[in-house]
Length: 311
Picture 1: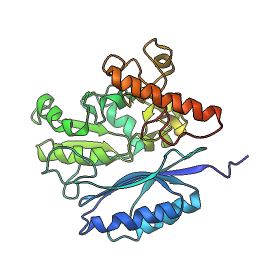
Picture 2: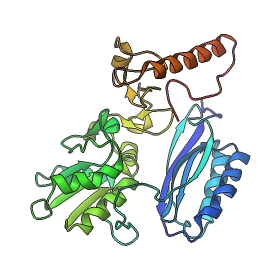
Picture 3: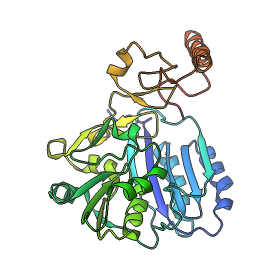
């Protein structure tokens, strides 16, 4: 039976030079709130990035409004579905960059690498001369990545530039294939590498999400789950929601094994952060979790992020 209440989720981005992006903030926020659409949109002079969710009719009213903005007529998005609203509220933020790489010379509207369709990705990364790089952060790569990929172990994407400078030389690294969640980080990462003299630079079109949507599990070279920035936490092939939670203390994705660990405390900490949090931080989190539990016993919903996801 079809779930008539299911939520449609659209992950989108577009590099385009906005003349007056600040003026878009309030109208977009008001439109989303009017139609019950939640999530986050980032606006910068270089374009738009975000994930929004809502009932299908409502969501597409917002998406149509986005496409009506000058420069966004060809805006594309990746669609998935959930039985529950994966966001608490709607945020529209103004940023210096829609994704921060830490190198102001990088401009994806001028130069990028070569797009590779998901159907051709397996053959590309199976080339023994190909250097495969996961452009995501350590908390994302920890739960899943492509087999044979280099892990930068970065805490933020702004560290990626230094990682490339330290570990790769365009004179010796002839072929590079990169990937990220939805494709946006690879736009900047491939532009950066082209600027630095790397000749053959490829990136997965549509990112991991498009690959998981397109490629059958039996044909897949993906290993693990893909972290997503909403209450689903992690998805697999066909956007099946995987059994991951989110630690309130550090924002790390946590597995059933993590939850069984003696260092795990619901709404407070997990094995990844228990030793790093102060007593004051833990006491505050325990009081917050106490209020959540109390609200549940009264049949009410606590007004704030759940212990599963901090947004």
